Image (cartoon, rainbow, N blue to C red):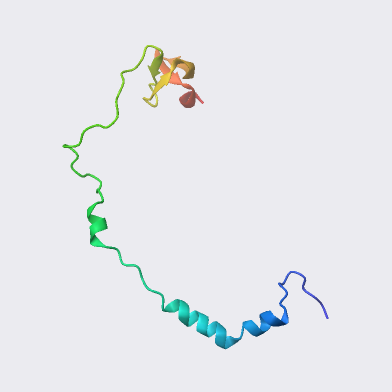
Length: 99
């Protein structure tokens, strides 16, 4: 008789455990689990896109561009001068955009 060595081997104890009645009982136990219900209080605290933020204040300090920084004219991000790759038509381009 050919033996399939890839199949998991079961001992006599494992075969006795997996009777059809026990498997049906396990399945019925799992189906009687409770369903979580979202509370409305949590939904009220969410902010929707396009919400009115006119009364909100900026919570970070914004610094002006420093002397050793430049604004990339491709991605419009402020970078340190060490990130300057080239200048196209007199406009600085960072290494990320030049790659």
